[in-house]
Image (cartoon, rainbow, N blue to C red; front, side, top):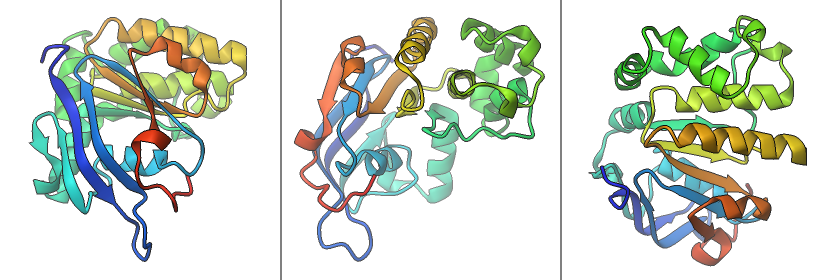
Length: 238
C-alpha cells in the first residue's frame, strides 16, 4: 500500500447514542492515507472518543460509509470487525490499560496472542515474540533491568512507553493514540513523542493521534480540527 493510498475513509458517517436526539458524530469526509501521521484535536465534548470507537470498529455508524483497508466496516459481522481490529490496529489508551500482574515484556507481547497476522509480522523482525518486544522496548528506552518487572512498578512515563510498544508490535496498519501525553509533564511529553516518531519512521504504520494539546500539531502532516469537521457532537461527553 503506497503512502498516497487510502487506509481509512469516512464519508457522511453519522452516529447517535441510543435515546439522543442529536448525533454525537456527523463526519462529512475524512481520509487517512497509508503510512501517514494525522493529528486530531479538540476539547472535551467534540466527539473524539466516539470517533475513535467508530474507527476501531467497537461501534458502527447508523449512516454513511466507513472504509478501512478497503473493507466497508458496516458490512462486516462483529467478529469480523474484532479480527480486523486485532490484526491491523494498535491502540495506545489514555489510561494505558496495561495488565498489572504481567511483566513489562509480557504486556507488550500480549497483542500477538490475539492476532496471527501481527505475530507473523513480529517474527519477521525478530526470532521470537519476546525478543521483538524487548527490541521495541529498548528503542523506547526502557532499561533492560525493568523488562521482567510487574508493569505497575514503572513510572507513568515508562508505562506510557510500554503501552506504545504494545500498540506497535507486529506493525499494525494503523496506530491510534488517545490523549497519550495527557498524564505527562512537558519534558516527558516531548521525550515520549520523540521516541514514538523515531520508531514509527522504521515501519509503515499510520499514526492517528487524538489530543487537546495543540502544541503537538507541528509534528504531523495532516491536522484535523474536530469541532470544525464534526457537524454533530452536541451531546458528546468525552
